[in-house]
Image (cartoon, rainbow, N blue to C red; front, top):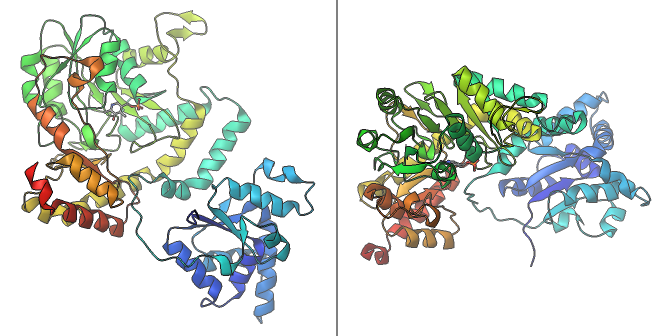
Length: 520
Ligand SMILES: *Cc1c(COP(=O)(O)O)cnc(C)c1O
């Protein structure tokens, strides 16, 4: 079967033709239709000199002034092809130096990195004779516009920050300090500054951040930690790993977060901490929770894995408790290209302990004052996160705009009682890690959406005390259980356009109108 075209590399000759032709040429319209379809256009950096000089020559031939410079070639390119990106030339591209046309071979190597469905557009006979992935203008498929909906979209983000990413990654490659390189400290300072917390300690994952927070607070066997039953497994897993017991307090059905009014009755002589989770990107009722912590001398640990970028009463998530833990898993609002996380605290003593725990309990080299873990963030992930921070505020705004659009598009379904939209309390702003609605007959709705090409997810299908590894038959959180039956997360990311959302909303309305679902 033919794979759909996703990426089109234009060789130097095509770029020159494009800069010479009138904007109504066949080439222009073919490329425009590709762009409208989401095909990404690339120029190969290995051909950069060739490309610019060919464009310069093409301009000279067509323009009377004859004063085209290299700069004007570059400007012309931006004008004619606003959506293109440079495809990096890597050292391996020149490994086929014995090829009679090494540049053509290098183009093939580079295009391969974009995946099997990438093609190279050329009008050079010898290149076309090599066959795929080279192709000529006539072979560009006539593409009919269709709206693609991704659950998350990390490609659009990558296109935006490619230059910073590539230079950061290559800098680390060359300086060689892959563990605890300078980028870690730079990232920690920036994260501390953004959240207005004294200390940020970057670690290997969100799960490890939670584990290390509990280790720093010396939680151990027989201790009880009060937490939410409606979260990702890791929240309770780390408690149980240390031999402590998760004590579940039911959620507030409006926000899906732990119901602060129900926490105090759960405090016992064994309670050693309170661990609220900021689900879907909205903070829990931290003032109430901190007040309970203070009354009972219990530390509060914020599971902020989903809420980096959110605010609570004007303060940043991660600045709201004794220790906050976030995750840089790729799908989180601030995601790396692998695992990562961070602990935040304004307590210098806790910060020092966390730094030791991250590094096998060392206070200096080969001197271990406590038991810790290998919980360091990679320098490479830190450099990825630094590049992503440059666009992060804008991405949070875009997520908020997308949530607003969903609210508008789906409000009539809510009025008809067909679904329940997420609520963000007036003192909160959400980082919109997920846009999660409640529907009856959720599994059936999800299947119907999937068959119409709308990806969704369920966060989370069962409460934590029903997980085999954490089973507590006596736990009883009816709101948590009801949420687990009803929640459905819709596509949500900063690059979700109006059209894609309208499609999600239309299909959802259509699915919810089907009578078979009424009986569930
Ligand atoms: C993702 C997540 C975690 C775990 O983070 P990782 O980086 O995947 O280890 C913990 N708690 C919640 C609420 C999460 O969403």
